[in-house]
Amino acid sequence: MYATRLIGMLVGAAFLVGCASSTEWVHPRKSKDAFTQDYSRCENTMMLDPKVQAATASGSKFMLQVSIEKCLHKEGWMQVEQPN
Image (tube, rainbow, N blue to C red; front, side):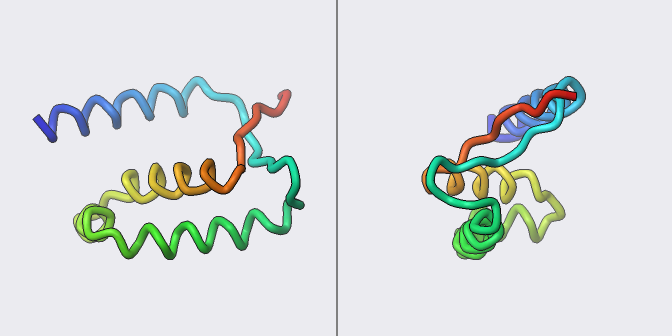
């Protein structure tokens, strides 16, 4: 069950990456410089999660990236499409 879900997520992510235009992280009250600090804080926090640790130890960075993005959304950051 878990493997099937993971494969589905990976295929979906690959499809989205292939079709996506460039995006940028924006925050309504913070500067672009604050993004790096928030990203690092989210990354460090997510690396404490045993599930994320296990995934990255096995060579998968996908779960870490998804966890970081969820954390950034909670911090108020949004991804917006940039015109090509």
